[in-house]
Amino acid sequence: MKPFQLDAVLTHRKRMEDIAASRLFDAKRQKKLVQQKLQEQNITLQFLIEKIEELQSNTMPVLDLISYENQIHFLEKNIGEIKKNLQQKAVILQKEQENLITKSKERQIMESLKEQQNRSWKEYLDKKEVTLLDEIATLRHDAER
Image (cartoon, rainbow, N blue to C red; front, top):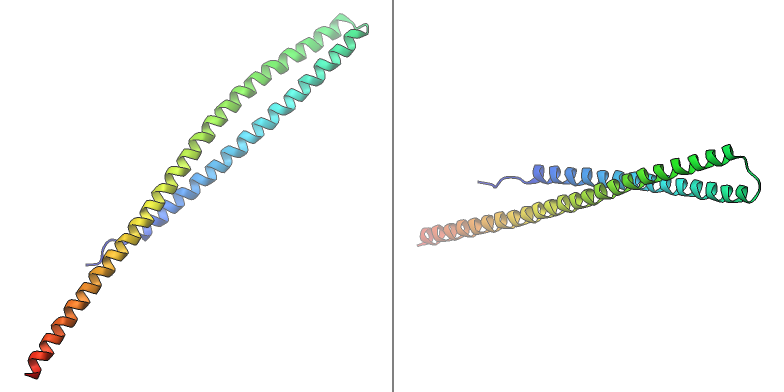
């Protein structure tokens, strides 16, 4: 009896690996977007700090100073939230990388198992063939006597 075919299992494992690779790609893309957003916010913050320093060297109304200070405080708070989000994205990225590695290993193990199973089946068939040829030779030899 021929052993169980592993093609369906291998197809499923490959599909799972492809999904894991896609999720890893998405996680990398999302992390990069958050990094870009953080960089933009840092540039804006630096610009505001430079502008407020420049305006403080000149005479500046108190309300404008308070407005700039509020903007700076808002940006610093926003940057803190973005950094927290970036850390979460890094954790997700790490998990997705581990998931892809696991799925890839599982697929490779199944491919190895399939190859081993095919070799065993071929050896079994070769032994059966040798046995049949021996039996045919014996029967022919007995018939010639």
